[in-house]
Length: 362
Image (cartoon, rainbow, N blue to C red; front, side, top):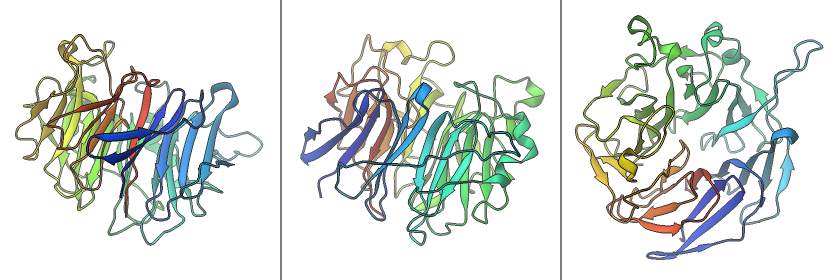
């Protein structure tokens, strides 16, 4: 089967199709000129979703049938009223993932501000998960790169779809074992270097930039944090900080091999106000031993001066674990067919890239 890549950019959705070894074809863009914050092809039924952030005109959500380019606008997540008062506006759909194989019409969405929403009818209607929204700890959540906190990572356990784990910037890591009815703060061991020492390990004040779990071993998880790389082997309850990471522990993106929980990829950069590659050289970091060592992968990537930054949803790996892709804020798109040993530039002239996702199977 030819592999497809969905590339959500500041100026539309582009779909790249792999037609042979090293050969890719790009479609004409959909939603040309519109900022695409999230894109998904549901692996259970082939439904396609695209979320837009139209600023003054608000957040929009569209769905297309399998294989179609005829998009239908559907209702996006929306905060309910509180009495006569309108709820806060959804400013961004920051994450969109399918439910389990036993939930063929279920979707989960994470937003800014930090709302978790669930749909059981293919996105036609959305329900705010009020049990998380009303947690008293939410008063201590705060914005990272955005002014308000947001949910950007949702991991549905493939073997127990009542288990949902998520990460919030800045609000730490949370877990529900009953499909969202109740929640527990997890994330022990995460460290926020930007806080005073006596508060650095407070789980509710953490800034995980991206959290992923290995599909074949879902209790093995990785986080690219604001100031570190962390690994968990117990479903995110406790985390180990990996300190021997070069050239930088800062970044936004992480992807994990679908079968091997010890193999993961990162896009390191200089943190805080700069947010550019270290030494203006673009690399992807890979570990194959659970974080004991890292290899800087640069064959085929620009080695200076290069100022491409990779956002948290802009690095992905396909079902085989061999095919990787990542995109940058300067419109570069690269793929590797050998786990990152060699890279091929598919385009250097796309609009700034917000999301890169392979079409996957279930």
